[in-house]
Length: 463
Image (tube, rainbow, N blue to C red; front, side):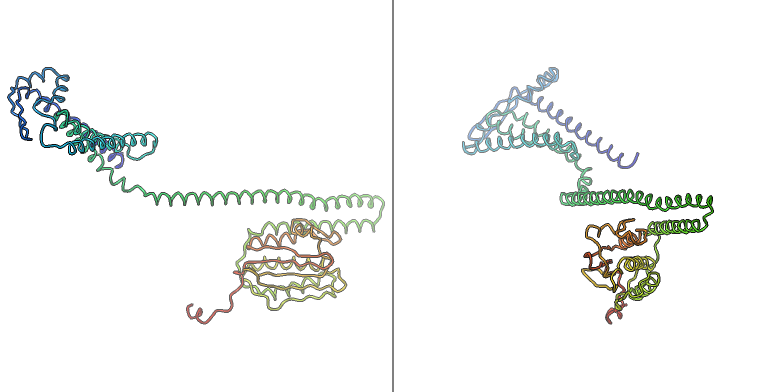
């Protein structure tokens, strides 16, 4: 049994003992007063000139008779008025003075009787109210006080002073029982949080629940998006990987026919087509593996000069495409980013490959790479003057295996990789294009990724 349980048990026992003591004291005093009443049967009472005096002439025989008679005689003794006169007849009370006492005592009794009723209603309606026994004791104490005032009001016409004394003893006993019961729980009551603190806690809990609900909604939305993306991924992967296999299977059948008929040249052509199909499948699988690694395989961020990187990639990519007359302009003062060097290289490789492959249909192809700052972002653009992209396809080009131009070879994974890398780095990717006027592929990253090369003298001194 822990200390709190022991303390609670002791407190409950103290409450019960205090109540029993109060009842015992009240009963003893009631018996004493009743015996006093029966012993004063022969009293002589004199009231003159506004003064009261009483001369008792009884004997102890009456007290012994009360003791033998039991409870009825005890109650009669408490209600006895022998030896006393009403207050109207004792003293110099004026009508105004007397009625002021009477009305005030009755009003006090009414208020003291109403308060316990309200307390009882409150305790019954609020089952979680702390320290309910204290509420009951307060109610009994207040009612006893009120009943004492009611008796005081009746003393002006009915001098049952023994009953009044008994009520006062009962009130005193209940009062001290309340004090004894209240003392051990006072520290616990002081430890209860105040209303302002409870309201603050409730506001915090409500705020936390709202935040949790918003986070849950976002997670559910992300989960739905991931599920939709997975469905599209499974469908497109199965379709795009199946296509080369169908091609290979078809040409294997042609090879069997060519072998039976001894057609060597046709056999060589079929082998070449099979090799191209397998190469396409291997490239698609490699790009899918690379897409799956984004966000999982992370490289340490290092400063990367975007102007130098873009120029280097443009020189490399231009040699793999038959666009010898293409003009490539790279903005020389693009900022240096502190970023994953492998991922940012993949972004520009895919954007420039896309520009050289689909944006050089113009007789004088022109590709421009530049940057600009805008509203807390650093933006980069790869712009061409090719055929452009119809607005209805501009959102789809960044989806997996979505290809607008079927005339050129491609896997449809490159721009999906670009968007995924941007998302991982807190950025975004989009295209702006007008059919027949080329396309501008934009990427935007947080401005915080820009290397801070210029530090004021004051800041350097602080460092």
